[in-house]
Amino acid sequence: MQPVIRHNLQVPEGRLSLRNKILTLLVIAGTFIGFGFPLPRLLAYSVIREAIRTAAVLETWNWPQVVGEHFIVRYSPAAGEEEMARMVLENAEEIYEPVVKAYGYKSGKKILVVVYPTREALGRTFGWDADESAMGVYWGGVIRVLSPEQWIADQDKNQIKSVFAESGPMAHEFTHLVVDYRTRGNYTRWLTEGIAQYKEWEVTGFQFDEPGANLDQPLYPLDQMDEEFDNLPNQALAYRQSLLAINYLVEKYGENKINVLMDELGKGLTMDQAFTKVFGVNIITFEQQWQQWITANWQMPKKSEWAISKQPV
Ligand SMILES: [Zn+2]
Image (cartoon, rainbow, N blue to C red; front, side, top):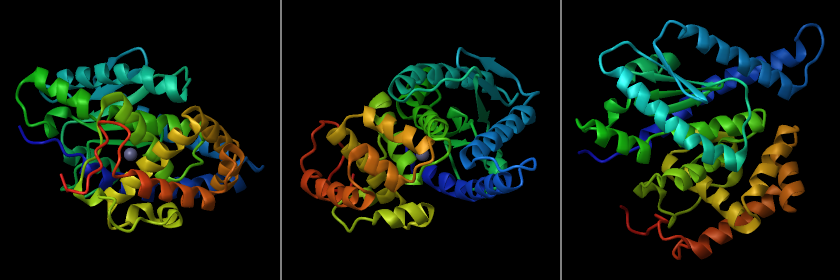
């Protein structure tokens, strides 16, 4: 069996920035144009996200589907895909509770998950090149995943199921969704990537584990992560730093403060304002303390499964 590698997840997520930029423009347009009166920015974001979600629901209205308590999984009618869709649904329902318990999410609507039978089909949805490979994507209130059979090189269905549960993207993508709703779209990429990786690690034990994420090299400044996350040449390092930012905040202040932070962002505070209010330090002081913490701790992991190593693995 080939090793499961999820680094390709980073590229498509990066490409999403274009769509996020379009969404941002729509939100700005909605704020100023609206229906003749200005809408608050965050409300406009929520309205447009709902429009995008509804469009995805309509686009896939005639796809076959399997329905669970919290998710609807739609899939292609290609042979074998129903079994894959059931596997995705089962895993989605399993990871739902631990993520919601930590970060809260309430909706009367079931969450749409679309399973694509090939990389090309998933890529076409976002206008990506055919050779790009994503396992999972969250955007606009909808989770889209590649059929597990496409990236798990195993014929045995039970084996595929177990690999999908251990390394699949559901916990990560669903956490992105929860962050998006809870903050009403007011977050930076590193924040959502940090929270998504942190919760995924806790729920499934999975971590990106790439030599490029080695911390024995200069780290990216936070303002660079804020402004050009998707264009940073060492994506593995950017993701690792994002995870460590959340890990640091949880260790120092407790996980519930992440909820408080998201709530303050959901009220429209800037990251700097929210950090100052919730943690008592502005974002610059946070960055200094967090990077000192990395320097002091990265060789002495507190958790046995902590995968930081000087040696590439
Ligand atoms: Zn992500």
